[in-house]
Picture 1 (cartoon, rainbow, N blue to C red):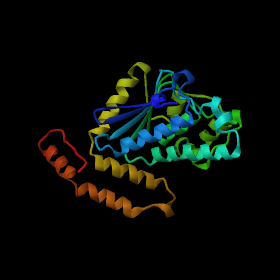
Picture 2 (cartoon, rainbow, N blue to C red):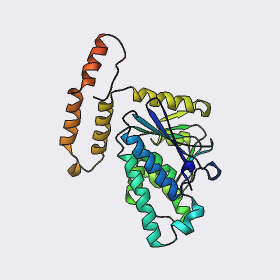
Picture 3 (cartoon, one colour):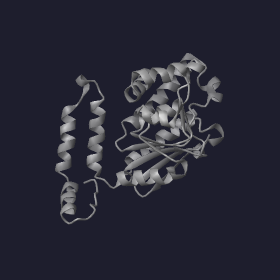
Length: 262
């Protein structure tokens, strides 16, 4: 596998990461996980990039999960399973704690590991034809605490249990109703909508967005683990910034602000 199975591009201040394995509904192999981690780290260090969009190629799937055809090689023993899970968990945690907003652009199937990827993102936007499933119970797969907790937190315990126990697909409308999806649009409008949505976020104050995201991460932690000092410092940094001055000045001058993250 070369990095052609994973692609990246930039447009304005938005970084795009594309799962490019359409013949397998963008099923993800170990090499693709490694390439995803690489692209995420590159965008994290690029100060010109303010928002990340994850998407699938081919128009039929976001990500259909792990590449089952490689299970005999990658997940056939207890040791191999532990190694695989460790690598994937590292990427999930990287997305979840990413300092810039992340958007899952979903068009079609979002299954298993693909769903895990999506729920790690800050925002999930899908087309009307999209379908979602967690088929672990049909394959006798085990899921770690962190992955199940994300579903409980987002969907609620009852819906998450229904979703996991039945292993049945749910529609895009059902996904919206249970909080899994934030925005539902037609397939023909998905590209433009997501691009405009990401661009809108990218024009807002980076320090404020960073503070909001990190404070949101702290809120979801157990109360005893929250770093409230960090939250206070992040909020204070916004008021000490050049961007705060620019925001006030632009408001008084009735123009759009030019935020630089300073």
